[in-house]
Amino acid sequence: MVANDLILDDAYMWTEDKKLSPNTEMSPEFRARKHLLFLVGTRPEAIKLAPLIKRAEADPAHWIVTVCFSGQHDELAQQVFELFRIEPQFRLKVMRAAQPLSELSSRLLEAFSPVLADVHPDAVIVQGDTTTAFVGALTAFYERIPVAHVEAGLRTNNPYAPFPEEINRRLIAQIATWHFAPTVRAMKNLLAENIPSEKIFVVGNTVIDAVREILRRAPETNTAEVLAPPDRPFVLVTHHRRESFGLPVERVFWAIEQLAQRHPEIDFLFPVHPNPNVRERAVEILGKKPNILLQPPLPYHLFVHLMAHALFLITDSGGIQEEATALGKHVLVTREITERPETVEAGLAILVGTDQQKLMIAAEQLLSSKSRLQAPISSEVTPFGDGRASERILEKLYAQLGAVEITSKADPAKSSYL
Image 1 (spheres, rainbow, N blue to C red):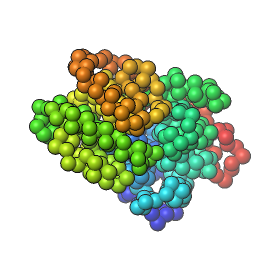
Image 2: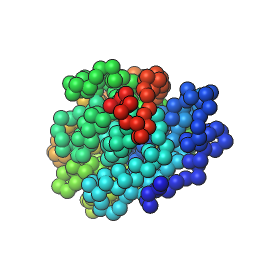
Image 3: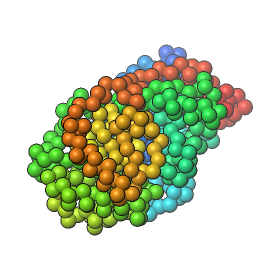
Image 4: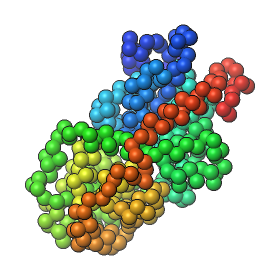
């Protein structure tokens, strides 16, 4: 059964190289293979799950891989799929203009259910703290399928910052069977919530795997092509968080406008999020400054190379805090609190919130200390790992799946993972 808003790609019927259909009785030689269903909704999820998906696909002796894309970030995530050559077997159409979170959650729950019932994988993989991740984990729980949570254990201890992510990841932690924590701090957060220690694995963050993969490639588009002129120094800016809509985002933009006015020799490159709450205010406040370059969202490979060449970054993104740290770049974080305090402790991130004066003072301090910006910062070992998180996750997951009895819906009493 397939929901009306579900597109079932022809690729779902396994092509010859995948050997068999999910609904085909497996011969004994294939019983060692484990079937993973990856649920992906947003661009950050696609970035952080791509290395894991590709590594699993490269090992067909152990893994069967199915990818379900919820469509939460449609075009933005599609760029990442194309970059990493990932073709989702399922594509859901759940997004509606100005859709409240309650409606999105309801539509995702309804759309995910037939996917899981059809595929019935050995494990469902969710990443982070999006609505896709939370509802995907909940649907898997209803289908009695174990859940692996990638990037588990991040906490701010403020239910509304970030919103709704803090509650999403806490709820996923109550559902997940296995918790793949990026850092020791994340592991300690989970232990404090009475998550069994034998179900927690500190593996690093898969975003480091993704960044290092991109840096090994030459950019398909020269970074200079998005700058005018290409030899000018620039600060890279992003802003998109839901809890900052309204006056907070306006204060951030006013600070950037003032910095651009004070420093005409520096460009401020801002790939603007398509959400109208961000885009409309960015155009209104920043659109007339010649050294503020408003861009549409950039392809991920280009964005990584721009991060590597920026003076520093101004962002409210959690993932960019991690990526910038991996690149040895300073970050001014336009949030009051971060679930990634490792970036602050590493001396690369400063929490400035959405206070206009605080942001301007911190930016001026960085700009006045050119030696700090120009001095290379070692990024060989970051607080978020060494670029081998995907390898560790699959190794641990395969060992754990060997001990889990996957129970059909018809016989729930035999479940060994609830």
